Figure: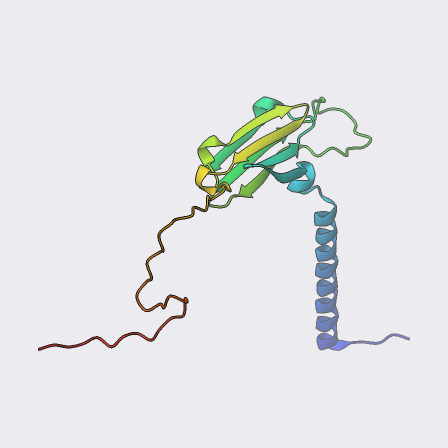
Amino acid sequence: MTSTLGPIGNSVTAALGETLTGAIKGVNRVIGDLTAPSHSAALPMDLYRYGDRFVARIEMPGVRRDSIDVDVEDRTVRIRAERISGVDEDVDWMQVERPRGVFTRTLTLGNRIAPALISADYVDGVLVVTIPLAPDARARKVAVDRSDQAAPTPPGVTSSGVTSPDPVPSVTD
C-alpha cells in the first residue's frame, strides 16, 4: 500500500531526517571527544604540597627536553610539550595508542607564591615543577611574651573586657 504525504508531509519528513542526521553527527562528535586523548590524559599530573612549596610531577614519556616550555606570567604557569612519533610518516600503522602532538597544561596559582623562584627539572620522562611559597606566606610560630605591666585598656572597654556604651561627647561653647 502506497501513501502520499503531500508537500507538507514531505517537508516534515525531510526536516525530521535532517534533525536525526544532525543528532547522530552530534552523538558521534561527543563520543569522539570522549575517546580522544585530552591534554590532561596526554600529560598526567600529580600535584602536592611539600613543606613550603608545591610540586607538580607531570609525566611526559617520549618528549624531548628541548621541546618543553614552562612559562610563568602573573599567577599562571603554562607548560607546553611536543611529542612526536619518531617514525617515518610512510609507515602502515597497525595500532596507535600514544598521543602525539603539542600538549599544554595550565596551573593557576594563588597570591602567596614566589613566581621568581619557580623551577623545573626533567628526568626520566617526568617534569618536576617546584613552586615555592612566598616567605611571608609560610607558617611561623609567634612567641607569646609575658609582661609584668598590665596592658592598657582601650576606650569603651571595661577591665573585664565588656564593652561599655559610647560616652556622649560633651559640647562646650
